[in-house]
Length: 324
Image (cartoon, rainbow, N blue to C red):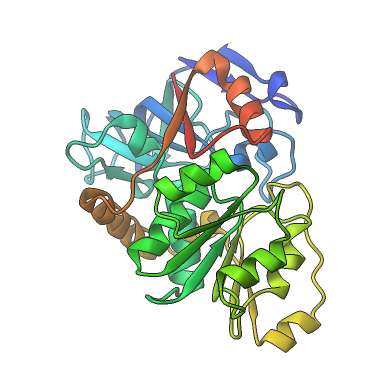
């Protein structure tokens, strides 16, 4: 089979497509013919050795995929050869075949296409864990989403609306904000042309948002936190800006507010039953039309570096997928 291989820490252009032996299913494992693999910002970081987890070199990046079961190992009864499935793996998705633990594999709902199936696990899983589990967002509350036009941002908007909340989307261009409105945002802020604190104040009538969803980090974090409402919850989802913010602790005291960490990968590993429950709710919302992943691009396996470069340059809205 062909697979993308990271042989040394570096930028996307250092990746290679190589011929590797077909994987074999061990006990409790499933081999899947990959039909689509979702691209995520952590993929950009992990190949540079900048992510929370560093796999041993060499490795194949990519952590979410859809495909068809090729083989099952001993003890696997949840899926069978020929089943269409969704899987989340630690690595290996940017390849024609991948091996995954059976507990990380679930059947695709009838009628779902492979691109959508490959785009729902990490982004929607992350945003569901953040918004529903960590922030406990309630109907009638207000949530501000920074970096709202990205994959996790659009997922957060849709999940917020599914819960009955008011959602304010903040992004860096009017075109991106138009996409946010298409996915249900009630109000929008262009933080490259507007003063973020003043815009938040105007959008919330001075009250401030109950929840702030931040996958960006960087310079906007402190301005956003200074605008948070009483008993607000600030969700630390990631640092797409590349800069980890340093917040004055007195702000949490003055606002009676919480800074809440969100690490979906670790949650999925430590609490697999809770994660599967979240996925069932997400698939239910998908069937009801309350959420719909936006697939803005499809790349061949040989173009994986270009997909990751586009992700790093923040040219992507919603999700893009690799099609081996």
